[in-house]
Image 1: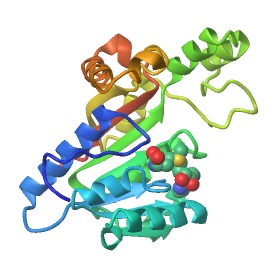
Image 2: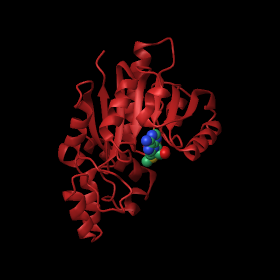
Image 3: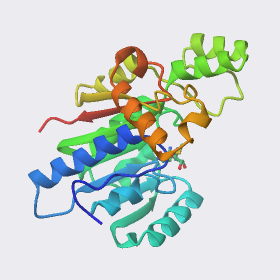
Image 4: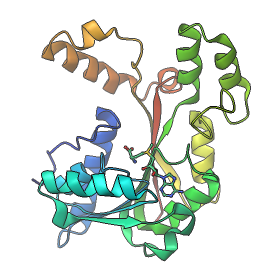
Length: 254
Ligand SMILES: C[S@@+](CC[C@H](N)C(=O)[O-])C[C@H]1O[C@@H](n2cnc3c(N)ncnc32)[C@H](O)[C@@H]1O
């Protein structure tokens, strides 16, 4: 399947991210009509984003340091009939240049990556170096303030306080994430070395934890209404600040 109207249907994020990626793919096709868009998905895991992008006709290279994740990606790409478009590569974002050419990708993804790596700034620099001039870097990160509210709502007040006050937004030594990021910090991180300009900063999962499951799952019409509301809320500053995930699309000027 390919085409501008097809939806990117990854499972790790919501409709607003899907829409932004599909629009970027359409943009690349318009600029380079003779070849498939080249996507590099760093920390791509089992292909929640890579496989839908391949289904849009992109050539996707997935770099991940986990052999198990890459094995799952291989099965998923096969099942979706797009294995010929997906190249799994075992590698680390810290040494991305060894496995992915500099300026080689039209679209570079780092979804669910910046919160788990040792050095988020170095990871951003590596993602940036892999993007072609005029290309885009898409990052999706765990939102800090949503985690504060979720813990407060669950009565875990000490954790809520820690996530709010800890410099890295962690609730303690047992926290699986190395950091949680707010919208202002994400913009600053992406634009820090002057090589990227943030074009889109939006909330993904703005209503996660707020709309009761019985409403969301009540009917297809209700699910659509929630998705539409999330789409409208994604760019509303106070709401994007408390969304479950923050999504940014930043461009490397041509
Ligand atoms: C939370 S998962 C996100 C997977 C996928 N991007 C998604 O959004 O569904 C994080 C992925 O990053 C990979 N990862 C963690 N540290 C990494 C590193 N230093 N270099 C490359 N991949 C890494 C993990 O193996 C895992 O597959």
